[in-house]
Length: 197
Image 1: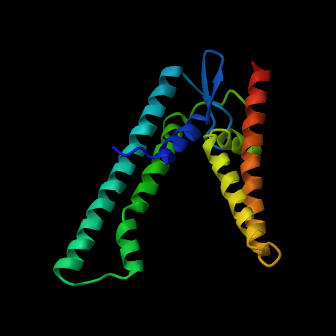
Image 2: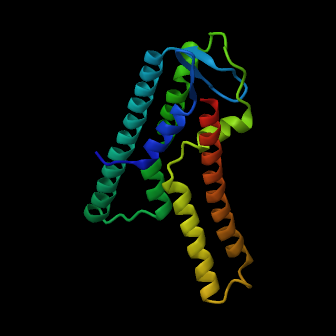
Image 3: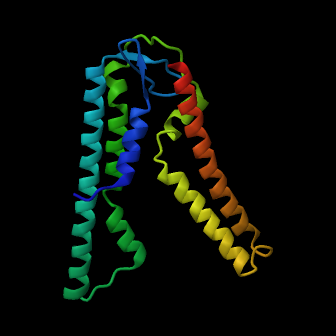
């Protein structure tokens, strides 16, 4: 099976919703909910279910893309019917709404089962929720963003378009800034976790 790094990122972000608490874990469904208690076995089961549902959706999408590509190729060769680009895009993306629904279902699975429990910790808050999920990004993502932004700025500088292409400069600086912000959040969350322990 093809390895999709996006899946690893979504799994890491899902795991970031859990925090250790006493001899088990708490789950933060969103920024307004407090931490709902659960055992380590329940957490492992929810993560396994999440991974299973996510990989099933990815497999369906990959199989559909292969079948759609073969079908479009046969239609073009056998029946001399060429599809416009937008028609090809629609054919390729037909199962995507179903994949999005399965992703949402896999995320809501925990709340559907333990949503009735009494929260044992206060809500994380909007910013802390975002920070914990951003900290789950792999380090390669901000490095790639900084590299792409820097390459864009170097290209603009090299060809003398930096003064004329303000939007390109803003885009390059924005991408670099966002990558640096992700690194800062990862460092902040790691540092606060070390202080807590």
